[in-house]
Structures are given as C-alpha cells and as structure tokens.
Image (tube, rainbow, N blue to C red; front, side, top):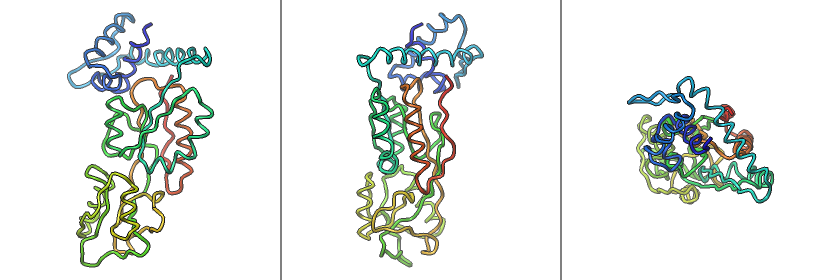
Length: 295
C-alpha cells in the first residue's frame, strides 16, 4: 500500500481537516483530498465523514488508523535495519530560549549518543511563532506556553509567573511601574498588564525585546521589572511579590505539540528524556506524561 496515502490519512485524522493536514505535509488541500479519495477506493470503505464544518473518522476509519500507523512504523524500522547506509531521519524541535537553557543541557548529549540515527534540529522562538511554524509544517515537535486552544497541544506542565527585579530595585510608590517585556502577543506580557490593571497600578514599557538576554540586561541594571518563571530568574535579581505591593500572577500551561502524521521512531524516546528534565526542574509542576499516538 502506498505509504504517502497512509501519511495523508494519518495527518487528516490527527489534525481534523484537509487544510491543516496539507500544511503539515506541505501539500495543497486538494492534493490531500485526492490522496484520501484514492486510499478509500483501495480500502473499499469511506474513512471520513465530511460536513461543511468538520471531518471525522468513520467507524472503518477508526479501525484502520492504528494499522496505518503500524505499517509506517514498520517501514521505518525496516529501512533502519538495513544498516549504516540507511537514510537518517530528522526531528525539528522548537522551544523558547529560556526553556532550552533550562531543559536541554540534561537531554542533548545523552540522547544524541543513544540515537545517532536521528538528526535533531532545535529552533528557539517565542511560543506563538513556534505554533505557527508547526501548523505550517516547519516543525515536528514544539514545547510552548499556551496562548490559545489548538488541536496539536497537550498540557504537560504548569509554571507560576513571578515579578522579577534587580536586588536593589524598589517598586515606585504612586508612579508607573517601569516594565521590560516581550513584544505584543506574549502571554507573560498580557498577564502582567492584566494583573496591574486589576490592582489599579499604572505601568510604562521602558524596554522591549524578543530575547530573554536583552530583557535580563535591562532588569539587572535596575531599569525595570519583568515577568518570568522562577527557573529563569537571572543572576543579581530577586522575585517580588505581594509583600512588595505587586499583585499576584497566575500560572501558565506548558504544552507539547506534535505535528500531524507519523514522526521519527526515536521521537517518543526524545519526549521521555525531555519530560524527565522538565520534571526535575524546581518550580515546574508536571501535569501528565504526554501520550504517544496508539500504534
């Protein structure tokens, strides 16, 4: 059976639509639709129920899905068993710069030694950018702070947000709070401004940067306050809280996103190693271990 048809079928089943599957496979919606039609003709059954608003697996489609995954995984294992001449697979993984600094040192060296057949490419971006790139087929796996509901995200951990300032910084009384923040679209920024607004505290943005390093420089110099997670408090800084007059901040959800379709065989091992590193990080509350799709 044509494995490209199986990949298209799995992508549609996991993403819930032909358009989303097309982005993940770098194909047009019409091309994916044609592949599903060809597969249904070969199977002799309708695999999806299509309406103007949704695409759902039929009973036959639900039965066929784990077999399709198993066929592709067996094919990958068979190719890998040929030996050193087999083509290496690639896993494109995205996360924020601060997450990379916190989690990857414990993961990278050991994992790459154990899985030399997998080429791991790491991309550091802000969470909204990571999700867009995954939805457009540019990433296979992403660890991101939840900004909106998606079909690809599974909550795996929670982290508190905290106010961070230089050791000697004293929040001004009766004056706007100087802030160093990420650009618009960052949930840390939105949560900070929302909390200050509810508390009736004015603020002014004095420093904006996409880079945590850039924000840290302004905070360490005593020029501004920022919002981070406890694991990311830079040297020479402290956490401020309600004792300093600042309002409480919420937790944020950390999600693991998988692109639709079948990922390399070593992906589950990488996720296990990543989750182990996250679980060992102080201040991070693991919600649940991410479940790999049934095969």
